[in-house]
Image (cartoon, rainbow, N blue to C red):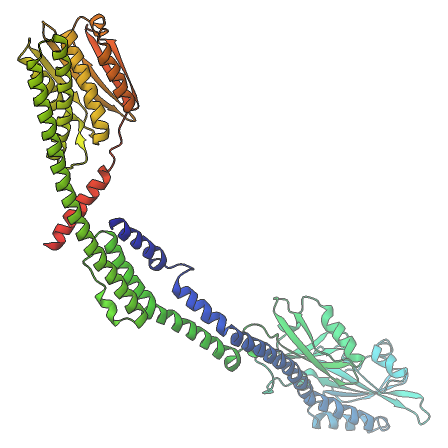
Length: 592
């Protein structure tokens, strides 16, 4: 039953006490996580779709904002173009300069007005204007484009780093090129508006020309790109009527989205930049209803399952494991009474475990009683066998005294010694603490003393020395060992000590798997010992019963040595006896 308790404790310890991937807590949590996973996946899909839609709307808003941001600058440019078209027929005459000067003073968005002839000569200019020479004008692109038939041309004003030149073609009634009216518009007057509420956080604006060069910008850094041709490529596509959005990285490696709109004439454009939508951008900071709430519900359910499994199941199983561990140590008096507050299934398991403890306790008590009774019966049997053998030995002793033939007397004496040795075995067994085995050291001392004392009254003095290692031996191995010692000692008495006495030494050594038993005398030697034919035959037979060998060799200092070498007997049942004794002590303490 002690082994059953230990096995139960180990099993429950393996199954319940150690958290692992096979535990109840993990399996419940995994099952709940899998059950809620479709909801979480649906929320993720919906959130991703919302992100995509929101990003598309963001791009549209950015494009519309670019258009709105260009509205003010476009109005200024359009006003300048209308003014120049109105002044083209009248930009000559004596009053030209005062009139142009008055217009510049009255208009906030124009810094200078100039009239050029068809050959590029400055005909008239407002006061303070610094028109270029005819040669310089003819070499500029705007003048050449007007001569080729374009109505309005805008470009960066030469010599004016912060101004835009707007030129309008002047022609005769039949369409011949007559010259141009130009206006210098400060870039500050054309600065795009970035305070539109529809613009995302971090949006910046710039004016660029048709070559992609930045004329002015609210913040130049977003328009300094790693690929300088990106803005020029967009400007080229915008001149062709394609104003799609594009993404690019600035010099610092930050990704931006760009959207633009033309001001007028496809020569100057407003370009807006906004941080590209990333994982933490504004487009993804509004997933609360579509992703965070389902994720929070998933995490809350998972945590609730883990907590409830711990409070309702796992902790009670751990408690039952501790009770089972106590059972494994042989204490079956403990009962899982605290489990009465647990769920119904745990209570059933606890009651079953308690019933198991009760059954083991009753069975242990019955086994202990049966074991005590068996020990008493075994002692009684050994005692009676010993008495019967002593009666047989006494009868043989009486018969020996009545026989007159020396050979018959000797044979009866040898038989009586063998029976006395067997009787000694049973006496030691019923007197020992454990009735199933005896200690070799105690047995050899008593046996040799009994054999030598039986002959001491009829012959010279024989001294004995017994040196034996302790070894627990069961009766099956003890009987042939005892009979071998009887034959060896009898041979020494008959052939080595006859008429002279001497010294008898008995040594027993346990050398691991092999044990050696020696009986040494100080007699004349092997010549006389060789005559013991029957004794040696019996000694060889007893040695075979012990799975060993017997021999008689000469002693170094004279005399002979009868040696028995055999496999060390296993102390069968010794560990079980100690275990039962410990269990009995624990049972006694428990009853107390």
